[in-house]
Length: 140
Image (cartoon, rainbow, N blue to C red):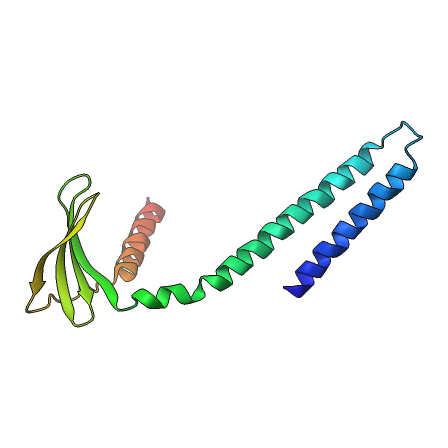
């Protein structure tokens, strides 16, 4: 990160020096299109570098936020309308049946016997279906 900040500083210093040199030569009215394109490219690189540094800093700050909800797990859900759902959530050792609408969430029931966690291998199923479809395409 310190390398990127120092590189950004060096680019800003180079822009300052080039603008100072252009100010000293303000007597000439001819502007080179290549110099303008170079300045534009340097400005674009600086903006992209600042964006990249900001994204890296934000990623570092968000690393620990996922651990707060690691005890919560959605077991299943059923859509009842456009904005209404019934969801079964595993919260620690309990399973809760929740009613979710656009404006509120209500606990409908606390299950005494937990539902089995539906852990189907969707990736393997998809892989098998994709390979079967590709074989059918090749055999045509």
